[in-house]
Amino acid sequence: MNQSVFGRIRLGYIVIGSTRLDDWRRFGAEALGLHVDLPSGDLLAFRVDDWQRRIIVRQAADEDVIALGWQVDDEASLERLQARLRARGIETRGTTGKEAALRGVERFVAFTGPKRQTHELFTRPIRTDRPLAMLTSGFVTGASGLGHAAITSRRPEAMIGFWQDVFDARVSDHIDARIDGIGLDITFLRLNERHHSLAVAATRGLRMDPIRTKLQHFNLEVSSLNDLTNAYVRCRELGYRVALGVGQHTNDRELSFYVVTPSGFEIEIGWNPIRVTDEANWAPTTHKGISIWGHTPQDLSFGSKAQQFGRALASLGRPEFNPTANAGDGR
Ligand SMILES: [Fe+2]
Image 1: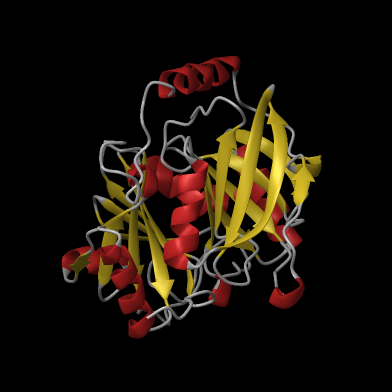
Image 2: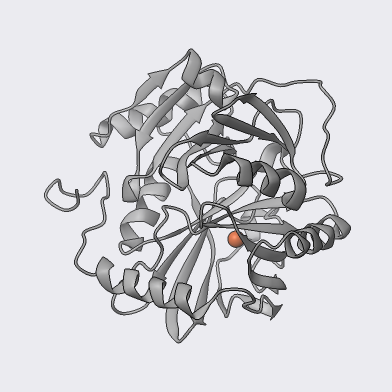
């Protein structure tokens, strides 16, 4: 039962709850350059490859990512993960039918993870041979998955420990950063050869959470440098707010920019991150600063920064849920 699931799991789909479906359709199709399908009036489904659905936006008041779907290689690995969750007292819920179809899978198993994020595990995506109609030449998915998710946490040790214990996540490296005068420690976790499928960011010293949404951003990897620069130009021309302009990260060397979605969290469009292909010789290091160059803040107003600061202060009085911690801590 203790066989590792490392390399057998990857980010598969993302479910977003929003009331701004018209704007999401325009943002996804015309700015990001994704293939869009409109299965019904209260649902958008974006494709980036031969999966029927990758990013699903459903009508809901959250204005947030409401679930992350993780693809697991086989039923045995899925069983192993469920057993580990159950052993920690974490309930899992198997679902088929309409809710599974909405995600483009046959069946998924949901659980509530750290920070009350909903995670869903599945083995079989529904694929399609319908041609893609998108403004991007391609997205890199395959064995390393859809991209990555970045989360702010006031209990980073508990959150990182959860992913290491249950999902056999490995620490790729750390970044020691200073953003708007606030010290940040960011830990990058990999589940396969993608440098990171998850990044956990925490303020140094007093732990604060300045972000309203459950994810700070998620990342999509485009196939070419042209795809990256064209997406950047489209986002600017269509008037979407670019949080950080084009730059290159210190650790995974990815070229990227960050744009604010209609729901308020950000999407990072990136190109050419390094992969961890030599597990035996990889040693985690700590990088200073998130960027070698660029990633200059662009369109974020003073008001939105002040709001973030207010949220950070308010978060001090709030416990952060962790499913494996003692029951009295967290709501
Ligand atoms: Fe990122």
